[in-house]
Image 1: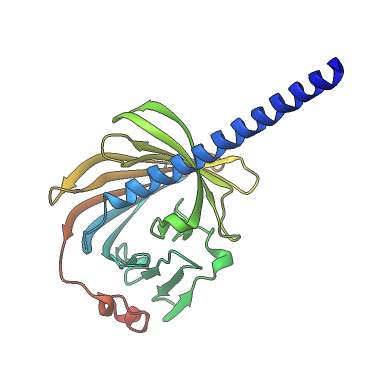
Image 2: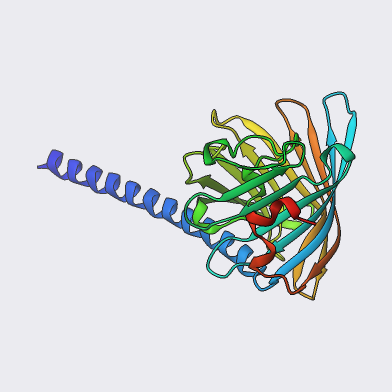
Length: 265
């Protein structure tokens, strides 16, 4: 009788332990999702954006090459953003244009116009982990962040450059993603993305993205003045320096048309 009672007690304790662990795991997932949702919710409503960007590519030896780019972005209700990047300098890439239609469900649509070839090249989903124009940003990195593209897990709270940050793990749902996971630092005050660590398909640290010198526009929207992507495996890096953010410019879907990509100005 004592053995039976002991076995029952141990079984109950075991079930309680499993149940507690399951609840904790669900709670971490729900919290990670909620933090990520809040980050997006706080940035809704900007409608459209124009900006100037300087891209600084730096090789392993520290040698730099610089590109000047104009950016247009359109917020799309119920779907991902549309964006158009037009290269102005240097001469060998002038006229190159990149068009991206992000989607919250399914593969993103992306096209690259290369003036030297005089043709528009569609970026296949299986190739989106490749480098964008020789930079340390991949085509995947250039799509807008959409909640449905990841699963989530809250890890912890940590001190960061902007006070206290939530640390959330994000797992891509797309089988063609170049990453097994992203570790993201989001500040608790304004829910801005401060740092992202990218882990490759072997789950090794591949890159780190940090965002600096945030400024607020229109009393609501926070944007960084500098984004730094460092590749830990090839020792290369790419800086994006942002200027002249302008919101509410009257852009429409007609300004983001792949059929006019060759004539993008």
